[in-house]
Image (cartoon, rainbow, N blue to C red):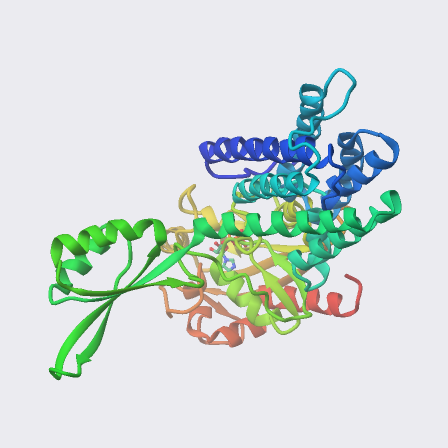
Amino acid sequence: MTLPIPPISTSVKQEIHDYTLITLALCMYAFGLTCFMLPYQITTGGVAGISSIIYFATGFEVQWTYLFINVAFLVAAVIELGWRFCIRTIYAVLMLTFITWAFQRIFEDAEGNLPRWVGDEAFMACVIGAIIEGAGLAICFSANGSTGGTDIIAAIVNKYKNISLGNIIMFCDIIIISSCYFVFHDPRRMVFGYVCLILSALTLDYMLNRRRQSVQFLIFSRNYRRLADEINSTGRGVTVLDGTGWYTKTERKVLVVIAKKSESMNIFRLIKYIDPYCFISMSNAQGVYGEGFDKIKAKQLTNKHPLVFATNNAHKLEEVRAMLGDLFEIRSLDDINCHAEIPETGNTFAENALLKAQYVKRFYGFDCFADDSGLEVEALGGAPGVHSARYASEEGHDAEANMTKLLHEMEGKENRRANFRTVIAFVSDLHEPKFFEGRIEGQILTERRGEGGFGYDPLFVPDGYDITFAEMTAEQKNAISHRGQAMASLVDYLNAGKA
Ligand code: ITT
C-alpha cells in the first residue's frame, strides 16, 4: 500500500516564498562561515562548529563533515520524527553543503587560502561573522526552516523529555565550542567561540522578535464608536471597556486595541483623523497570544505518553479525550499540524482505520490510533457501512442529509435492526498494527429524537434502552457505545504495557 506524500503547505506560493527565504538565509550563513569564521579559526556551535574543528585539525573541508553528520542525524530524525519535519531540513543540509563548497571556491585565493578581510582583527571577524550567521538563522527560522544538526538532536530529545529546544541546543554548543581547546590549546579560541555563540543568538532573537512585536493602545475618546468601527474595519479587534472619569464623575468608554507594532502608524492616522484631541496611551506588549498573534507554546507539565488520534471529527475527539485523557495525552491531527485529507479508500473499517494510523506514523512519527466507524442496517444489507459519512453526498459529514436518506430508505421496512461498529487500528510499529473492535446492536427509529451526540445518534436506540444515543449524556453513551468498547480494549492493551 503506497501512501501519497502529504501536502506540506496549503499554498504553493507560500512554499516558494519559504524556500526562497531559506536559500537566501543559507547563503548568508555560509558567507559568515566562509569569510569570517574559517579564515580566523573561530569555532561556532552546532554541526558547523564540529565540522570547523575537524577542518582546523585536519584540513578536511567543512561542508563534507557537515553533510556526513547531518545525514546520520537525518536518518534518525526520519525514523523518530517523520518525513514532514525533515523535508525542509534535508533541503537546507544539501543546500548549505553546496553553498559552503561554492563560496570557498569563489573566495579562496590561488593558494587556496580564505580571505582575511579585517586583517589580524580576529575579534572583529568574530563579531561580523556572528551577526551575519545569526541574521541568516533568523531568516531561516522565520521561513520555518532549520539548518539541521543540533536542531535535530533537540527535536528528538524534546519528543521524549520536557527540556526546551533552546536549552538542548545551548548545551550541545557549549560542549562543541569547548572542545576546540583540544585542537588549538588556546583558551582565547574558546572565548571567541562563546562570543560568537552569544552574538549570533542575540541577533537571532532580536530579528525574530522584531517582527512579532506588539503594542497595546488604551484610547479615551468621545467619538469612540466611530473610532472602534474604523479600527475594526482594518481587521483589528477592539474591546470597549466601561470607565469613570473621576474628576468629572462621568461615564467614559475606553477602547483597548492590541496590534502589531507595524500597524500602529495606521491606527494613529485613524485616531488623528477622527478625534485629534482624544487621550491615548500606547505601550509595548511583552507577549500577545491568541488569534492573529502567537500560539501559547508552554507545554502541559505532563508525563502522560503522547498518542495521536487521527480524526478530523471534533465530536469523536471529544469522546475519546473523555475516555483516555486521564491516562494519555491525546493529540489531534491539528495539534501535530497535519491538515492533509487522509485518503479513506479501503473497503472495510479495518482498512480505513489502518490507512489513517499508518499515515500519521509514517509521515509524522507519532504513535497513532485511528478508528473507522459506521452504521450497519440489516434491512439495507449492511449499508451505509463504510460509507456512513458520505451516505447522502460525496462531500460527506452532512448528518441531517444522511439521516433523511436513511429514513427514506427504511420507509415501510419491518426489520429495523442495526448496529454501530468501530474498528480501531493502533500503530506504534508500522509493520505490526493492532486492531480493536466494538459493536453495539439496536434499532433505527422512524424519526429523530434528542440533541446530543453526532451523526446518526438521534435515530439509534441501543438494545436494553428506550432513549437514543442523542438523548444520552456523553458518559452514558461512551460507557456502552461501539467506540467506547473498542477504546476500552485499546486501553487494556496499552496498560498491559505492550505498546
Ligand atoms: P474521521 O474519519 O475523520 O475520524 P468521520 O466522521 O469520517 O471522521 P468515521 O469514518 O469513523 O468518522 O464515521 C463515519 C460516519 O459514521 C460518521 O460521520 C457518522 O455519520 C457515523 N458514526 C460513526 N460513529 C458514530 C456515532 O458514535 N454516533 C453516530 N454516528 C456515528
